[in-house]
Image (cartoon, rainbow, N blue to C red; front, side, top):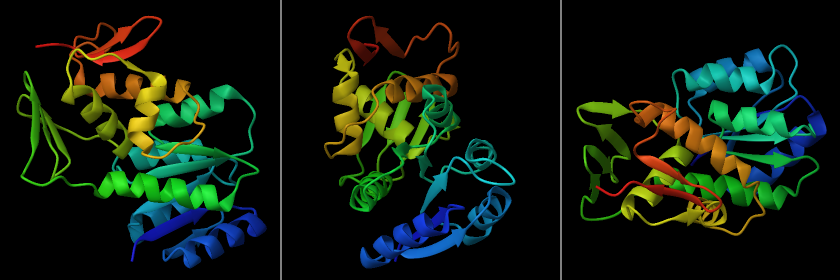
Length: 226
């Protein structure tokens, strides 16, 4: 049974999410503030974290920042904040997705399942995607550049895989969102820009002058041809 950690200080919301996740067959553990959420993430080893941004003690952005230093566990942020910058910062820190409050519990469960499917996805035949010195081992969900193993979040991995499978093909942001989520959600297209920024930081020799993941201005992104 997959385990989901809910870090939410609003008791009614936490109970609502917990009940829907139980009905969907998930094991659920809960925390009500940032420090305890961080501690439980490290001790309970959940398969997914549903993380509120506005937490007492330590906000969701700081929790994400500390988790991403050592873990690639999928994170979906819950936010009542209206500022665009908060969402972008959360994604740039490594969150996989976000859901605005108020939200549909059914949609949240669907998003959790979609992210988990991507995290668990393994394709048969020991498939490996190789472009130049970049290698993506699908069964192990491992990325190497040269001899260096690169730690990616679930979303970063799937974004890179989508681009690298067809070098030179130009993808719009909407196409990349569809490819990553596997379901039709109205997602914020600039989230792709945040994930691309993170990806470049990890795989590019010079992230400010990318040579692998390229911007096609006015259209979207592509992985460079060999």
